[in-house]
Length: 357
Image (tube, one colour):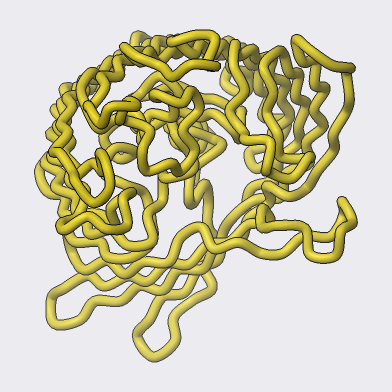
């Protein structure tokens, strides 16, 4: 893959891309095998609005994937598995972690089945700018919640810009899958997307209501500059956007319902610009926010905001060094999470080196 193409792929999202690059392992019994992933070293300075400054270093984001592809009776068949090291600590020490399954899917022509990106992500992420933040890529879009970005099971059908997705519902007693229908129109270097989402939302007891939302996104490329913007509004979307009635939603099934069982409305938008200063040097400024029209007592704000500013230098075609400053006005990792995984309200500065293969 040429360096320019790698930079373009990186624009989709360096923090969440499932296959930045790949090494062809050759063919065996008519199947083409490849291996890909990256090794990432990151050092993060946390400066929370409350509490003391600390430093965290990790290699846990490093990931490895395997792909197998073949043509069978005129059909393109592919299997893909990817893992990283963000599972829970295995023995209580900060330097010992367990593998975590990120992706495991089968694709047949235009159909993908398995654990992989949800329909919201596939609608919004390709039209976003580059973020380094592992705990917040895409915030402000309808796909900004990393806790539910890869359902246990999803079926995606994509053809000629159309995408239809049925995925494992966020409410485990729902009688039908969460659904997404989207269309992307591309004209030269520019792209536009319109998506509609719907899901069964648990209200009180075993009762439920249908929540629907609409999302729009666009990305423009002008010579060495890329501009992205998106917006969404509706009901039932808070759990996918990452902010709702209880503030940060995580994987909460009731993020979109108030104390009386009524659906709340969440509205969000994001905007960002990436500038390629040189062939091997690029920088991005991005802003995203999500607002809930109602929050519960104890949540001190109805709107979460996130700012990211980064600079990435491709020292070699497969080796990036970068730095990102970011700020968010509310915590996005619950207190029950491992201490090393918490993302408090306040500022962060991340420095990283990433080797892609």
